[in-house]
Amino acid sequence: MQGRTDRTLVRAFTAAALAAFLGVFGAVRVVICATFDPATLAASKSLEAKLQILESKDTTPSVSYPPVIITENEANSYLKVHSGEHLPMGVGSPSLSVQPEHATASADVNFDELSRTYPNPNDMAPKILAAMFHGTQRVTVVAKVQSENTGVRVQIESVVVGSITLPNWLVDYVIQNVLQPRYQFDLSKPLPYPGQVTLIVLGSGQVICLRGNKKESKQ
Image (cartoon, rainbow, N blue to C red; front, top):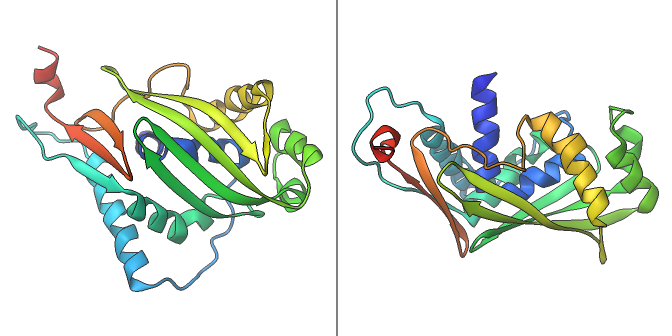
């Protein structure tokens, strides 16, 4: 269970807005096999390898570690290949963009299908959204991501469906009642760094994960 939590946190760091998006619409569905071009597969596998590095528990810490740089292309290739493992029916074509201190995630959402297939009737957020919207709409989530001494602070700034910005009360409801319980972390606090990561910097089209000996850095 701990390994699964660490992986979720890493993905939240590198794609914070996507994590928020999955919190709104999250439900695992059956994977649909598809064929992808070699370049997309290579970029997806590159991200998987980097995630393994970030998640690794080094039993013999070094004085310094090379930084891990994740590009938008790698993230979007990974989403293209693996989105079927994470997104529910009715949600597709996810994309991610990264700017300094901000991450933006988008996807097409068929609200009619989402309402019919959502597995948990006690989760009201998808039901409320389905009552507000119909048909397929492009949904965009923008998050501010700031690296602090103890971890990464993620703040959802806006959720837009089509041309309509969701009210803050609904966004807060989703975060508190769907996102946080499902992924077992609290967005009101910094998300702790995984492995030997000491700082995460969002730049134009890339995420830089700086690493070091945490024990020495605290001295």
